[in-house]
Image (cartoon, rainbow, N blue to C red; front, side, top):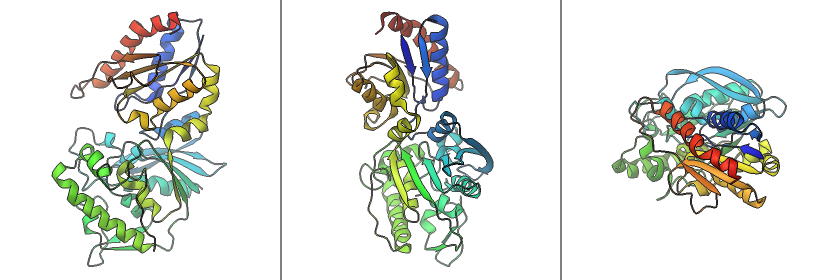
Length: 371
């Protein structure tokens, strides 16, 4: 039997590579006659560009930058020196995972650190930025990135506003563009299809995750609308909300006012880049997984899109996940992980133990029976 092991990250606990290595090691030790191929997958979520950098063997560049609250942090990104493309995750410098147990504060959190990574990539020769939007801690319309790249945001008295200062968005009255503003293109990878505004937009859907209280939604969205008008007016463009603008607090929206930009749904882009279809064709069985398969998973998430590849080639599939929302999707087998207590300081260790226990008790039987 040939088994393709292609999990997504188990958000907040295990990377896609860690999950894949655990499964692969178990199969090699318990069923040495089975051939395996381990290709972790991503869909624009947290760590997508990091994973692409590894899978494609790109040059890794490290540089100091700033986290969502302006504290020094070492960031890395991938650079394809031939195509002059840089692969950067927003989560590297501006990720919600960097805040930890601290109080989330979208009125302060900024993407400025991601902008510093982009600036470094430009200095290294990048002409196009592939930006993975997953896992951001911000709702700043990409203002931080734009500030790091040379836009000046001024208050009503014409004074330059300082990134990471409270109520930054609400104090923007004027925008100035530096003569040295870079000329680059962006491809933004996302795993959600929300627009920025509206009842299913960034603020009502994702605002609470980033620290906004429900009673603040309306006023914060109004502030964002004011800033959006100023940005597009500055460039003499008309604004039209788009699918994907709701990802990562509107980063693609803000960047689109000043740069050529294309939004791509991460799983399709990722699968094409790593030629995953060829690996599916090779395999008899596909094992995938994510932390929790939920109502958004069938809107472009990696596991669902891999399932479609498997179905198209009439290959059997196994999903490892928590939650009960995948049973009608068409996986041949679903292995349910126990729910985690994220207040437990050892929850990451527990996640690893849960995964290993599940595959020891259930996956071996599936492999022996051939699903």
